[in-house]
Length: 94
Ligand code: SF4
Ligand code: SF4
Picture (cartoon, rainbow, N blue to C red):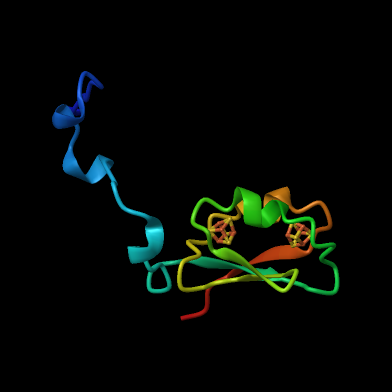
């Protein structure tokens, strides 16, 4: 039977559903199954990928954006939001 959880209080939530920390401790390089590739030639530096990335894996340095594969989980949101098609998702090679 499927477990049901209510949101009556934090104490009733399973511990795995709660994160009080930043994602800095969640390195994803080992389990990511796909990776975004950012083409700087197509990038217009709008910052949407940086804004939408849920893991702060898109980083900005000197006005240029790049992806940290230490923290990227391969969700593809950045590629979906990029207005220039500058990010493509590729299968992660192991
Ligand atoms: S969303 Fe696309 S165009 Fe905008 S900064 Fe990111 S890669 Fe560049
Ligand atoms: S694939 Fe997901 S986690 Fe990785 S950089 Fe794009 S939005 Fe962030």
